[in-house]
Image (cartoon, rainbow, N blue to C red):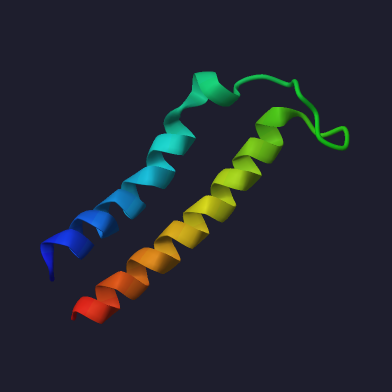
Length: 65
């Protein structure tokens, strides 16, 4: 595994964890999006970001092996 892609892979794996653990950032109800509190659509956004990050990390890992 190359050092640069290895560091990028680790960053892509850590990013979703950090966004989910930033509770003070999203522990609120305002603003609302189509009546849904911020907390819920932030969590849904984190889910999408996690899927994208894990997909890219997997592709990077497969290219290196």
